[in-house]
Image: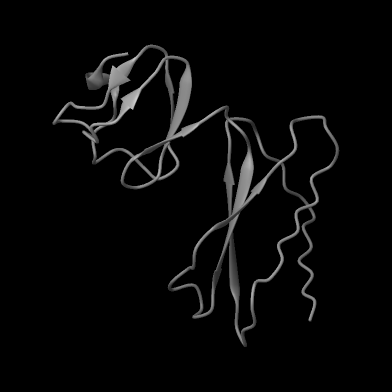
Length: 125
């Protein structure tokens, strides 16, 4: 991999995952140009401003909550999913706070396919 293989700032999106096959520095001014240095055989994910190194591609669900009708969402809370064929994933988030009106946003991250069906949202007081 060479610095020119990094995406440009216009096309890179939050959550984009890339595989680094050989040692490289992200220092191409026409690309993301973070100045970060990476070793070989790594996965990196774009966090909006820089690259985060992840040890392996894992599937996860991020939940964020809006208390103003979906205009602004708060910080995402991640839930790392079990590997494929290792038990059922029953996702539970705790301590979401209280609100008269609440909009929930779920983001599914991973390189595998996701199947979500017959979902039920339970709210406890």
